[in-house]
Image (spheres, rainbow, N blue to C red):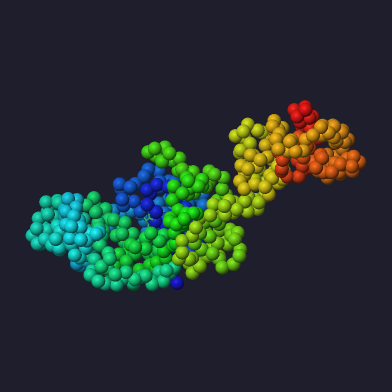
Length: 507
Ligand code: GLU
């Protein structure tokens, strides 16, 4: 394979959808796998759609995801600038070359001319009229007008666009790495604008010119760009670059979890999950859209989940670090069919990664939440809490939500447990048992358990007579990690205080 150079080429029109992150990820995995380069190119030729802050958002998102970029507006590189608005001057000569070679033409039509054409065609029974081989001769363009008229218009500064002259009835064949041969007849394509009246190229021309000049070897992008690919192939051909045309791989869509169609922000809002990697604040409305980062996801888990939306390793292994993904990834194993987004699976991935983290690591994150709640506790205490709770948590925040009793004595007690397990004898048992606890000299989990069991045997009591009441006294909850572990961690004095408090409160 010649040198692999791939690019992620987003338009800064808003936050980056997870579909875009997946495109970036597959490009990155492919580049790293083949020892190639990963380029980030900002495609901002459509100034009307430009959104403030979107570029910084993109860069921060990729960074959070661990997708490293080799060449970009930040990293630099030999093929810059890496932002299309800064490359403005590069494109016009190519557009003009296409005109001179007879593959494109100037079109002076204003929006009224276009409306008139469309209406005429509709009246003649054409349901979706286009600017194409049928209509172009009736329009204000350099193919229909005389050379004199064209010169006059150009000289007088009449605004114009440059359109591709789509050939009649030609088959364009694209060998897509994922889809195989895709064949499109040019009769189904229109004379797309490739250069606009504002002096900027459109996406199509800029994309092809840049991919060529940046020596891109593979274009890996979303399926929504497949309809544009035949035009891109023609542009390579007409510019004389067909031999160095990149290979194409159009990735399948990410579908909504229920029903068909592409996963949208609305689906996320409706079903309660983020569709963006990091939180986005709309600069015009200040509206916040949630992100995986702020929702407590571990970046590696998010990436692992995304990698499986369209690709699979061909084995049952599901947990992959970025390096393992790089090793295992191949475009051959990317499917054609859309991949359904599965939010439960996303949480499952997070849970797996959370479990794999060390207690020291988790404690750092839990300390942040504790601080926010005005709680200051020694680090090894927090580490033990993490150790005891991590199997039960999906997010670090769950450890706070479900484990507050490690830090604050309960003020409420689970009603169902009280109803079922707290009866007239309970306070007496607890008072008795509390005295046993007092005499334990080394108040560790094992000794507490021994004393607890001894007491039950002596009194000929079943577990159910005391354990739920003991638990509810210490935690207020019906369930949780080993109670003996909890008691030993909060300590003898606190355990006894909590039992006394529960007896008093529930009397
Ligand atoms: N600028 C296009 C986008 O926003 C890039 C498409 C491509 O990769 O060719 O997705």
